Image 1: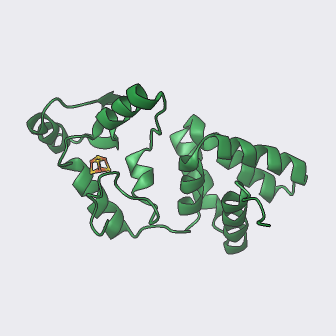
Image 2 (image 1 turned 90 degrees about the vertical axis):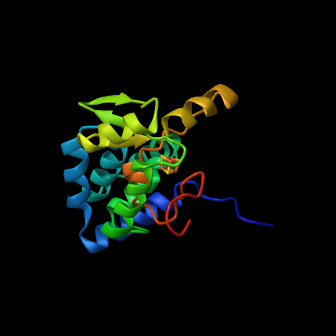
Length: 173
Ligand code: SF4
């Protein structure tokens, strides 16, 4: 008989390793600076570890992280130095997204998310300082086809060595 998989194990192990290595502060700084709601649960889980809160509190927080999707768990572990791509690999991956062969990258332009209609327009926006956000058109199609969308943020996904471009266009994919 096999033991059922523990969906929170990755997060729990990642947080414990980071606590042991003293890397929690770096993750917290990023979460607070970006003030993004999807970072709040991971941050709260880390705080619970730091404060030695009761296991029940931590379990509830980890359930929330797991419910928020694989992206939250991936973000926690890379922020904590686990499966974390080097800066060179991270930039090489994002460079492919910035020139995505399918023009699938949604960009962030002046805090708004924009899907460039053509590769030429994308190149102009990137040259003007825009940054890639998600695989926007792909996510919209996925939502239409399945009613679900993962919404992975490319800047986070590219940091995780265990993640891949869905079209395997990243170097080494
Ligand atoms: S992850 Fe792949 S499909 Fe998505 S924007 Fe980057 S290169 Fe394009």
